[in-house]
Image (cartoon, rainbow, N blue to C red):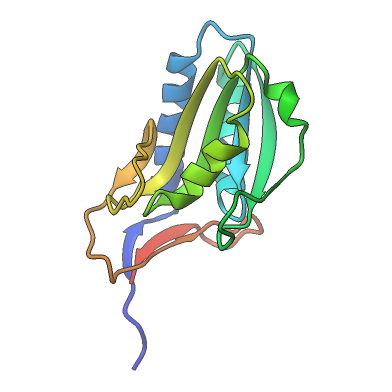
Length: 169
């Protein structure tokens, strides 16, 4: 029997959410010279890239894209970054992921920046599921879903032309 999927957001709705988030980031950081947008692999970086493209067109500040790869199954923080963490000193960092479920991924994402004095750290997720096990909140969310714990949210963001979508299964 095929698994049922319920479409939550289509491609146009995802783009509208990302546009709105970009404008919220602009409003929150209008007086800044530069902000750093850190996307958590594998899908947070796609959302971060899209936010960066929008901000590059509308914002007076420069944006720099960073990527973070986390080993979420590890009992200690293990992260691979494409940047020198000290370069974030006294800057605004926007941490981006696709779905906030338990909060573990964002908690590990915070850990990357713990030893650096940041000016400000904000979080962005496309979907907030409201099942947090960690005391994590998000500053900017595309949509908040109240789901049962057994349900799964699939975010499809294909940068090669396939249609974007968010499904609940």
